[in-house]
View 1 (cartoon, rainbow, N blue to C red):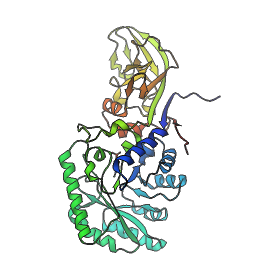
View 2: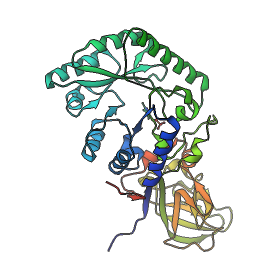
View 3: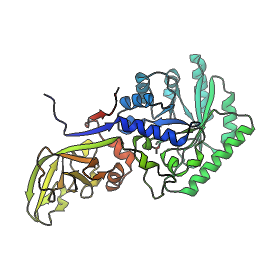
View 4: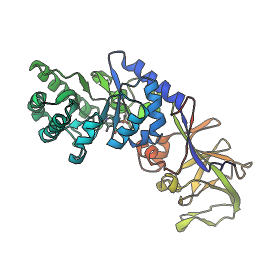
Length: 380
Ligand SMILES: Cc1ncc(COP(=O)(O)O)c(C=O)c1O
């Protein structure tokens, strides 16, 4: 007999496919799409998501390490893969062997790749990253022109792309515009010197929503592919998010319902004391499943179509919800942590706000213990 799920995530592959189709429609035919699938495809499961994105026509994959690249290669051959982080010196030969395009920020890195390419008798396609204000990777704007010219001349290396990354596209329009302007001027200067780079890119999800004039010829959405909008005070330039559907919903169950008297304290640390007689449901999820403990006494879940507050500290495998207003609730009932139930919806952004974090972290924190159930299309 199958063990029933206590805490699981449904992944709607049809939603993912439609999200990618919508993004493609928005960016237009001349712009290619690099789908960012790092951290197990933002917690959705890399293998089935890579298969789905291949079938749906992604142009390039963006990864954080070579293991992710190998997983993608095992799903299907031939797709360009860009390593978004810097390669370690120890990883250079492997990256060349697996034809993973490196992100370069310096001459030293480029020389290592050039030597490895010559040793392996192949040509390495690489992207040069320019730091216009993120401060994490990339060569400074003033040195970028000379470096690009030098990399162009290195044997075994083909400079395939030039890119930058926005630091605050979701909340700082001036800074984002300044980053875009610096990057555009650099591209023009390189063109004027005859350095032609086939692929130029800058936009992540927030920039796609808020800075749609800087698409260049490739965009790098992560969050939007999964149907989740980046949070932030800026109103999107276009009503894109309305057309995107969150691919992931997260569920657990009620395991026990009990009455508690006024004045009863609940869970570790006694951070919640019942202000009145209440009905409290014990739920089959906790921080061991990746549900942020910071949501203790702040987060909400959906039970019986109603929004119910988490009361007391969230523990490793269980947490408690106030179900006083949901009289019919009983053990075994489904609980929505992220997703829709009845008329109501809880988003990854809601959960992020209650847990003092961001939706990227909410999704990538959903732990290995939570089975991902794929619906809506053939999974790998
Ligand atoms: C370099 C780079 N580009 C694009 C993305 C995708 O970002 P988002 O999920 O905000 O679209 C990331 C994600 O962290 C990234 O590191």
